Image (cartoon, rainbow, N blue to C red; front, side, top):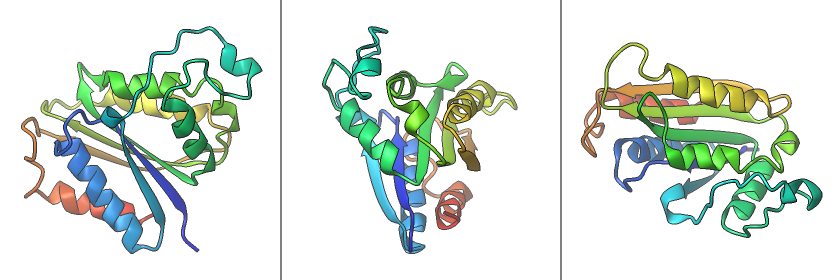
Length: 179
């Protein structure tokens, strides 16, 4: 029986490099018999955490009552979480950081997740993804029993779609088949 995979793409461009790699991961995971859902965060209404702590006394439900309540439910029931973000100023973009912040009310209930990370960057410097990867890893650290299963770092891809004819697309597919 396959696993329940949730891909959370913070790409601001529907056919951006990060989004395209997520779609290849999705194909690989589906071809391996898994149930896969892809969420394009740009299509969702997700407000910033206001630190009101309402969620802590309301079973994780946020007072904002936006799309994050549904996303949190999906994250809770998934076996596998794929977090994908382009790199902005050496870390995850605002959409991804907002998503991570908004798990505050339920993160301790997100147990035993298999974690995959997909990152893209126009920059090719050696350490360009270090802070973003640390952000993903620290988030997973707070999800009880979660395990990192794979990381895909695609450097040197600035213009939308430039990953299409590159071997990194095959890497994304193969990473998906490894689920």
